[in-house]
Image (cartoon, rainbow, N blue to C red; front, top):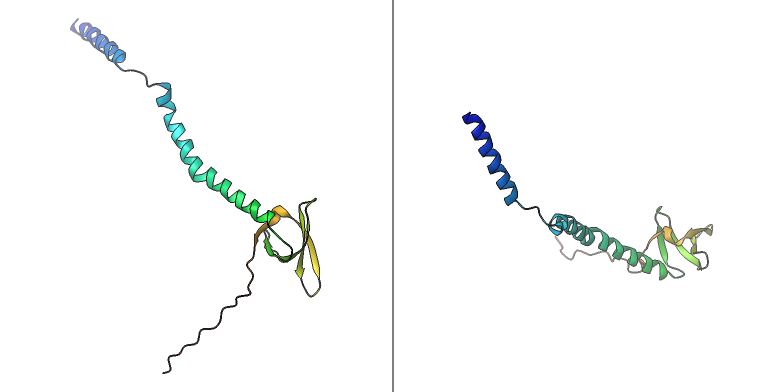
Length: 127
């Protein structure tokens, strides 16, 4: 008999504690997802967009006689730009005058001119 009284008292206390506990608001439950998206935006999406803009700017500023490298590793000099087709004519070998046509999006970058060759350093210490 005392067991039933104990169960009944425990059930009433449990009901009171359930009423006291409130459910979190909808905003509070979505807050971790919102913070995760903001973090992903600043760590992944924004830098990628910046790189895409820089690459597109580089492609738009390629001129004849620029030395370029493709995504496949081909190095050549631009000899003709076809804006209507978004392609370049690139000379890859000067001796045989080998030319290939490449799409603009295949260009990985513009190589710097190597006009400034490094001078060998002389060691003035005589031993």
